[in-house]
Length: 414
Length: 146
Image (cartoon, rainbow over all chains, first blue to last red; front, side):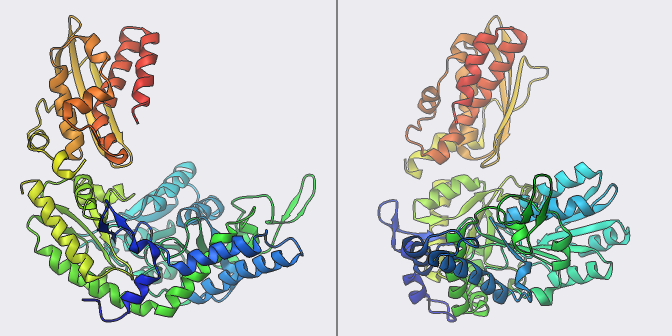
């Protein structure tokens, strides 16, 4: 009952955590991948190898350990460039995660480029991390924050974008390539094209898309792109910000201190070259190096195959879950328009109660507002349950999940 | 606790048919709070007469545990001495619900009602009775719940 496209058995063997039991004797069914993915042994080994054999600070020292750690850290940058097809590696900044990347843009680019009465456009299905920084910026500047709405199929209403763009006041359009709640894949290229025609900057939040879809930065032609390592087999605490070189060169540093300087005098400082201008302080060296192994792992499988596997699994899961009595599903019904994320409600069972019940059967799902309260308001619900898949999930696990949903129905006398 | 022990008939009944659900106009105590982690919301209104709870109502949305807990708490304090209400503890609430061994993630759901009640009492005692010493003690108890 594996999906046909990838060898799940051999993949599962690489993930030690998938062998553990929860609630004494229940095999773990991990369906919370949109929150964070599990890590293969290759990533774990690579981190421990760094600490065991060449732990040292990067860029400054001249000893052998530092040369090794610097090379390994910078190699990850090269691999990221190849993975998302970035031409110039200096345009890639390592940050803590997508959240920090967006905050960096809001601070370093936004404060210089968004002024009174300007408009920043976001969408109703954004994660809080792509809303709150823009609320702060627009309030501070006396600018306006506008939202592209979500239709009943869970897709963005792009006519609204046209209306905003026609005002001539939009400075930035920012949106996720894939919704973390609905799984909707945005019409990314179309949105970017519209913005570029009007000379409007575009930020794409790739936190949910890069782990699951092939992403090509040069083809997208956006201005800023952000994603996190930990949702794509890598460690927590590592994210990537990509931006056009000419933008980065004109932006002020976000954090200041060591490593980001060229010369410091008593009252004057000059900045280091890109990308170091934006990487102040000792970075998360071990986890950046670990991320390298995650990129290798996904490369070996191939992102097209990752996507194919998830389409097959999601289709199977949607078929099965639709048959559960009392289920309400959110997001596009069309499988080609969504990723491996299924948000739902079951009768009058509150998502937290549901997650508690099915956790007893070893199933880890997410329940709540998924850091998307604006979308919850739009859907007119206080919360949803969310199952999200990745390369190691199987149809058998979906079956366990469906059986558990039916047990929840019985417990709630539905 | 297993789900079968948590979601007993009585909890589901209070979740689906909450007692004392609603609002009071111009209440002596009005307090609202939410659990930011899960978004459970609760608002409680209380009227006092001769140092007793003359009326109490709540509104809210959230899981079965949080809503049943709130409803059962309103029944527990209705008509009771204000001193009794002030002294209610976490253990009293869990005892009242019959949920003694909730895990760390779900115990907050059960205790949100008590947190709202205690913050409400705090505001009343400090602003209307001007008794800052007792008020601060109650506030400390409320913030210590979770």
